[in-house]
Length: 334
Image (cartoon, rainbow, N blue to C red):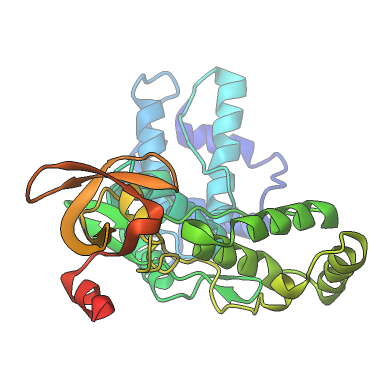
């Protein structure tokens, strides 16, 4: 029996995975704009041909790439056929389908944000292997949409700077999409924790995170949180009044940093960047170009002076500012 004969025999059975049998026949028999799957090499091969599984898989990939209508429909048809082929004849076709709703633009783009994390050094071609039902043009378009802020959640923009370096897709600051559905007490615990962190070096990280959470809450939730904080916890609710809504959901690390004091240090530490630093040695203001030698705590840092190679331990209250560029460094000090 050939693969084509097998498929034709299966058509007599019910396919619940697509709305109409016409869709199935258009895919298998072709249309004016779409090549018939029956004309592909795998369909003329017999079921006992050892090369059939690989050829069938390759032809499915090509067919799905060329199919411009519902990707989900065509993928589901072939998933069902490969399942029946396995159950009846123990022929296994390795058809790896993404576990998320890949036809949904938001889910697909959120997947790409996670996929292009720096530790993986993934390329566009790597993404195409996972999203094999789409061509490279579609992946490129998704990345453009992410870069220009077309991706949004609850009315808030998610705009991320994405570049390409040595073939790999990289982000200036790695985004970690995280959507939580919490009860009110859980949200209050998170916001109160962020209130405690909203000072010193973590101030802007904490404030931006609190703003993001606050902007997604209903008016009822906001009113209830303020009531609990003010009347039951007997704390100042001004922190919540100051959480004005932001236009964006994602803030890169540079926007969460401040040139003053140690505020920018977390950005330089995480990204292993060199930077300009000004600090007081007794009453003398010193300026150096350095990098983090070892992280100690928020009370002090251990740095390496890149001009002298000296290792210095500096107390946080002696540090005036830190900056990535000489221009912003000089501008701040002047």
